[in-house]
Length: 130
Image (cartoon, rainbow, N blue to C red; front, side, top):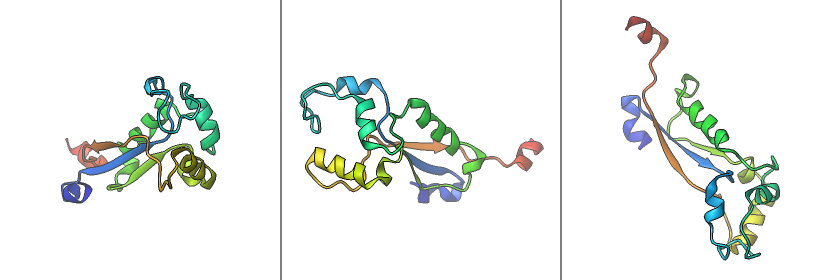
């Protein structure tokens, strides 16, 4: 999509959050894959074990990344993946921990993927003319 719309000055990037404290954690069935204790999954506990920043992400952390993509500071970014996961995908230990939980090798964990389309950025010069 990014390549198709680049000539129109439309940027298309994606955001890949890690473990984020949201109500979805309370809706995961207790017998779900990776939940060996048959108890609700605690995102704070899971983050402490899997992320180098040793904390669960907040919705505001993701919102800050999305906000950045929609600013002039990101006007030369398109077709990129912004991973906001507390360093989880950079950590070999976290990747092995996740693979052990899932019982299969893991290339790159993605809790979810959201496409973000920002309007074309207007230059300061164009803004002054209008």
